[in-house]
Length: 164
Length: 440
Image 1: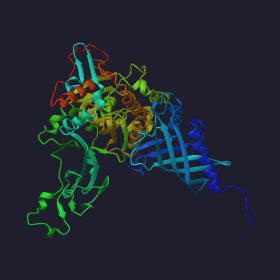
Image 2: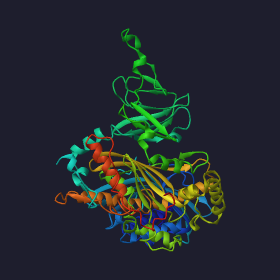
Image 3: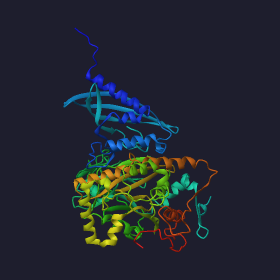
Image 4: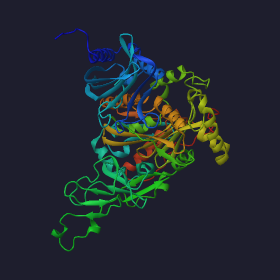
């Protein structure tokens, strides 16, 4: 029996997701946007229609790279009032599943728990995030990121004011 | 403090103030439930949400659990969501399609016409047990206007069209944009704000806050090179404010960016230019240049008193809010779109919606923050009054507050047990050449 120090594919992906989570918790949003491909999409469906298609249905967020960059600019400014001062967040990523889909792409699913604290209150965002990751040398890039909330409504936060 | 003293309305001196207890008091909140939400027409839903026979939707309206369903006969009916037997919820899903709704508690069954069609072990009841008396109860009044369904818990209320007063014309202006009628796009934005519901009425019609609160949105739009108005931030948003009677109010402004109906904009892309031109031509052919100008080249934020907002801006959002407590409300927002719209134009419309609207957009989160911030500020009870005097002594612009006064005056009358009042400011001479709208 041989042992190896080579990380498994899932470990590589987990490292990537943990790094992404740290960037978001540290509010390093420019670095976070750099994780995306130029043709990327970031989608958050509504709570009542988790299978919603942004081309046809109302969703919370449907960003191409232009709007994603603008979202980072906005959140980095002092004028995104819901997030200025910034909330404190802590992300927990688990239950990571990875499937190779060919063409150097991976289909990834993870469970996500984000605690957000601000203005004397704290509450979680809970859900799962589906990714399409593309290999980029030894690293990955995000080609698609679809974050599905489990809550029935935005009952505590009143908005998706952070990146979920 | 007496209710009559909650508002200072000095029309001659141009002073209008609202006492902040109107947004914090439990007693006044209860009184609103009785005097406003049990007496006014309250929005329930849109006909397109129950498109097919058997379709149903569950809602909470004015505190009551309700659902509405389209019967096999094609008729839309609204029911109180409570079993006539012992009270359990009959409809326990938000939406679906069925022929039979069965109460899970004792298994009484009802059809989508509300008739009681099944009672297990019915022989146990005496001879006077009458199924016909035990069908699902309906709200005292249900009426619709152009696809929008409203309920009223006052059996003696005036009819819906009379109630809508001047708001009816604005509903027409929105619905007439569609050739084959409007529909609600699937998916809704449901979120709460820890703020009094009347703050969202004010905010939904507040042209004054746009530039300071939504700077990041305006920066984003101008960064895309999409603000082709050539005007400065403060001058370009001029429009008009109107109180439409019965508490309904509107601000109407020249468009700032594109409108899917029917004002093309570079942000929409070249491929959208031709379809939008065709829509515009259809409107001109049907309604003439003047009405088309209003439909396509102006936008409007409309409040249907007390708690329905229709913002016909870069897209059309229908926003309903249910007061939960003096400092809490649940908001549900939908996206209204013409039925006939092509796949690509719908995609353009959806995209246009998301830049500004919704709790994941570039503006709504900051409104949530603003309203919650006000509500927390109200805890400083030594600051007793909110000032809503802006534009009171001039022809009101969309950045003024006449529309909020129109709402508050109706609220004040209702709270004193009056159903009608004069909601207008004192007359002022129309001298401002800056008001560019063509409607009057």
